[in-house]
Length: 140
Image (cartoon, rainbow, N blue to C red; front, side, top):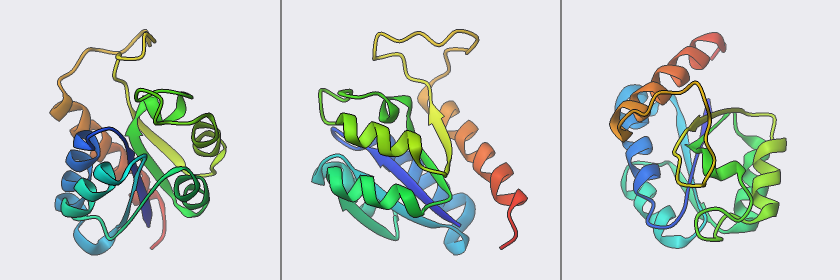
């Protein structure tokens, strides 16, 4: 199974997701780190990603060939992450056939009702649980 972890700015959220996925699944899942910038990509690489790329074209091309896309909800919002997430990136991610496992962070002025306000480590644990559920449904 191929999992793309997408993050931008400093890459801290993507780094944490990558570390947790690597600990939980080891080499059974291939992690492709996609940064909106080189710093974010580098931090995810250091966290254990198998492959890494950064920039608009890399994200738009790679999301077509993964099974799961993970990251904060801002990866599907055009011009988020202080403008690093371009409209073209958001569209490519939304249109990708991959399952999306997104973390609801309310820094966008968007309010998603019905969700509890959990700390970041709890949200990452929930994401890993969802990947485990999706991974179990696939034949490897």
